[in-house]
Length: 226
Image (cartoon, rainbow, N blue to C red; front, top):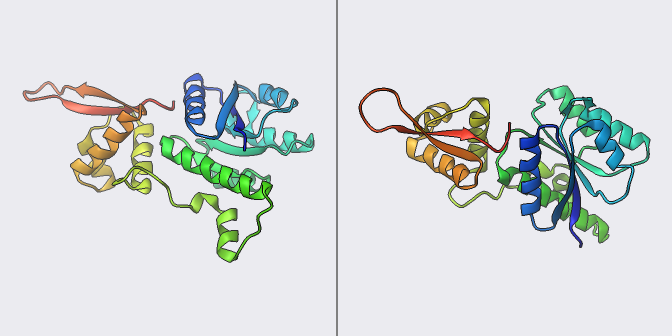
């Protein structure tokens, strides 16, 4: 199957470039452009050539769900993955009702988006090849792809990684000790997750000096999202 062509709809330039980079790192996916507003996204979507939209909910000229509603009203059935910081239950439910196929909360690790898009591509290939479901479990997996097992690096747990990412996104500057206290792990465990994010380019290492004698502490800040 040829690469799935993805339109990133995101008004923040840093986040938009991060999403573009994530998509282009994924085998089978190609980012074909970035739209910074709802109006621009709808303009791009009037032309063929987009297979999937990564859509932020909070755009400067409208809500992401309104973009989806206008797409559907125009007969455009392009699949949509919400990539957003909108945590309201009503927004999640509304997205599901109008056919948003995935809902990914910011900030997130690269592995989170990778797993969601990989699951989406697998389902799309199965549908286009005319496959049939074998049992109820397979139906449930199709209807709830986000429940599939996350494939994070060996020795790391996806649920813990997501918690660390959420912490880094809440404020600038976390030490391994502070993360460990917040999520209830050892400092060594917390540092493994932080170092993984830093090695992936999603967290920045800096030095924290407290004005007292002794070595400075390593501090981690989130850099892939704003």
